[in-house]
Image (cartoon, rainbow over all chains, first blue to last red; front, side):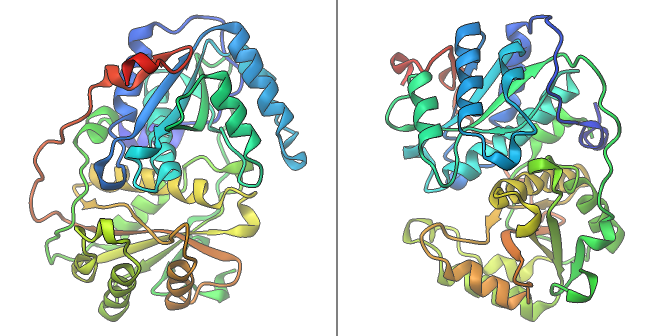
Length: 185
Length: 185
């Protein structure tokens, strides 16, 4: 798929067909995710691929338990129904102080690579800024080593339905020249 | 350009031709950047497009002044030579607590969109985790409003040279199934 079309038609999808994802397809997606830029070219990623129903259910429970009140409109139960969840993690010792940045960039590439293959998913954080417990519990669930930090959890599957086109804020309200123009707010 | 090829051939480039970038080309890239996912679909981005040599020079000086010692192998002086720098910023009031995540994802899409058009750039952070002064000074330089936070600064230009292919860590050392496997470290 062309880059522009991939970017324009990608959507966050939370409902998947029961159909399994062939392991080589997941590997293709992770191969592309690791082409993301990383601080000092540290390439710190590790991807934990989850298919076990019990692990997926426990991950959904953790996400629900630590969901901030204003985001409860999106319960995480659908995680248990995704054929695959990829936990995008980073080695701290390879991250040069940019753990989140490295993990987030790879997740963006992963979502595009999945969409270009007819799959869908949604970006979910594996941590809360104010509360370290979510990341700690995910690390325990996935038995991450002490050097490994979870950054995102991305469910992947063949989408059950095509979401409607997204309404975007007008581009001209987002672009400023030379300095931020308060007049455009 | 196909997504896979775009992802595989993108490189971080710090040396650009003097050739100007037509404004519609920059707008096309920013149009794609704003298709990134964002928390609660807040679409919080604002992009400050810099072409003024004085602003670019001052930004380079700021990045140099706050560069951690271990990263001084990459001085920021080349920023002054880039025909365009895009400062990717976010409105805090639209970010739902995920300022960095929203800004970083749009920057990843921006870099791919630029590369697919024959341009190149490099991901640079507009903040330091431990020292708020870099972000504060960039905000002052760009006269960002109090609700606006800078996340990255991305120089863009036609590349002066093609970087050599990148050596990637083997994929199989990055993939783990069901839980992190200490045996693979």
